[in-house]
Image 1 (cartoon, rainbow, N blue to C red):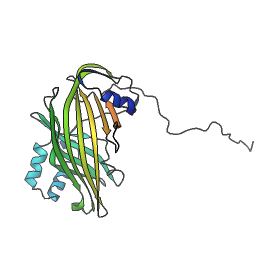
Image 2 (image 1 turned 120 degrees about the horizontal axis):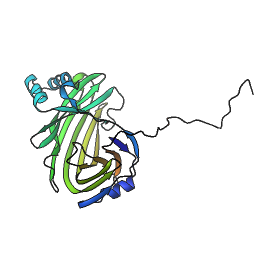
Image 3 (image 1 turned 135 degrees about the vertical axis):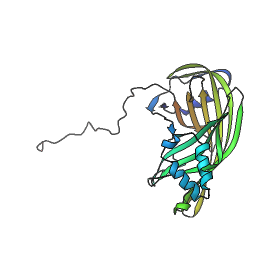
Image 4 (image 1 turned 45 degrees about the vertical axis):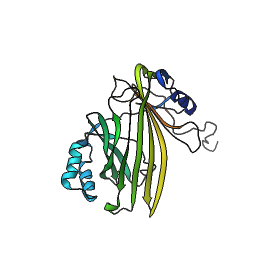
Length: 273
C-alpha cells in the first residue's frame, strides 16, 4: 500500500461525488510512504495464550474461551492505531485485530495488545460486522459493537471501554483512478462510525465521543479495497477532517525525506582561522 499526502479540499470535493457511473480521479495523489499489510495465522500471532488467560481472568470458562478462539476467529491483522492515544507510551504496543469470514459476514471478534511485553487479547462483547456480502449498489448493513480493555484483573487501575455503531452503504459505482492505475466497475462503500469510547485512569472516566467516515473502493479483482479514505467530523458544520489516505500500489522508489537540516552558512574554524 501507499500512503498519500492529505489535501482536504480536493479530497472532500471528490468524496462528494456519488451515484451511478461516477468517475473518481485520484490519479495525482502525492505518495509520502509505503507499507505492507500481512494477514497472520491466528495461532502464529503470539496471542493465543494471552487470550485464554485474559478470557478466564474476566470470568469466562476454559471451554468457552477455547471455543471463541477456535471457532470465532480465523486470522489476525496487525494495525497501526493508538486507540485515542491510549497506546501512546506506557508499554502498550503490537495491536492486532482478529477476524472471521463465514457465510456472508466478515466480523471482528478479538483485539490483541501487548502490555509491558505481555500479550493480552480481549473478546468483543458484541462482534463488529466489517462487511456483509454480496456488496451490490444500494446494499447496506449496520450494527453496534463493543469491547472492554480492562486491566484491573491484572492489578493495573486503568481501562479502555469501546462502543460504536457502524452504518455502511454501497452508495456509488463507477471508474476509479489512482497512481496505481485505472479501474472500471468499482463499488464505493461509505461507512459512518459513531464512537463513544471511555478511558478510565486515575479514578476518573473520560468519555471520548467522535464520528468517523470511511470510504472504500472495491473491485472484484482485488481482495482489499483499492482505495481507503478516512475522515472525522469536526465540531463545526463543514467538510471532513481527512485523517488518512491509502491505496493498493506497486513498490516505488520514493524521494528520501531528510530528518535533519544542514546550516550551510556557518563557518568552521581550523587552527583558529
